[in-house]
Length: 398
Image 1: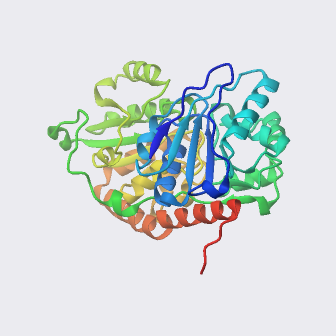
Image 2: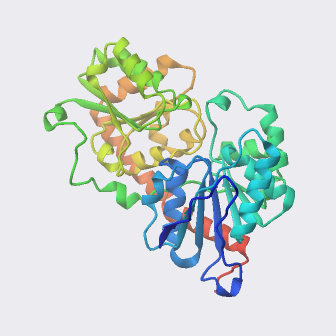
Image 3: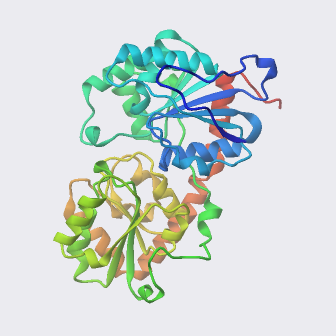
């Protein structure tokens, strides 16, 4: 059952948790997120927690106090959302504050997520409060072009006590070994998975402002947070370049700080009347059911859930060759995954898919079949179950 802890005061008042293992229904996992608002990582962990059911209890801490993805966790799951402020730019106080929080909760396993939770990882590495796993899924705008040396060094220090570094992509596994200097035995490569059956079925209700008369138009669509590293300005410019030769619309699904700037750019490009900023939607199948072509224009990705969802929905993909995207899609789709800095090739990929209905259909079906064989959610669930069992000392009987 979901529940909130009492609001933690700045004075350091903390919730008290029963620490007796004998009284626990299941091992307690403490998850520390930079944010638990809707996004690839929070939604994936919500799905995993729901799938594991009563095997684990969960405490979730969002350092930005954002808990918008809590609705993705089944109400039957034993999960508590705590509020706690970690002092910023005051390292010693931040370490002491997080140390007190973890000791009060008494988790069997600490899970930290991405760079935004790195100070919490450092605290546990310094004081070895409990078993620790760090999950890294990608980079923000400040590391979209190249990794920062100071962060590489800090990661080595902060994650020294982590038993596993979990990554979703081959490219990130390589970075963790070669740049962060972690032994390969500590790196767990767990690819993301998608519920292929769920996304293969189109929803019965489709809406968010697109009318039935618009079905005479082709639709290019993306699902992405509106953040700088997603470089949706590149998509707007590419769509502008092909717009004159197609009766097409562009649907952008997602929210974020770049929205106003992107709308302004669409106006400057003269395409605002053909671009729909949908905002956040709970069931992304509603958007995918309208897309003829799915696209990503990001400067940095690893193994994006949105690509897996589009593949499972039978959509062709036009995207940039970042992270594992080329590996993810079916071989038939790979010629439409282009070099990041080749804007002309990106325009050609979109244009070619829009001009060729038979190619769209064929590649979409190929992607759907490829997702079922290579990206099913069952493998991901099993890998996380094994990871948590290993860390908490639980092993299933044969």
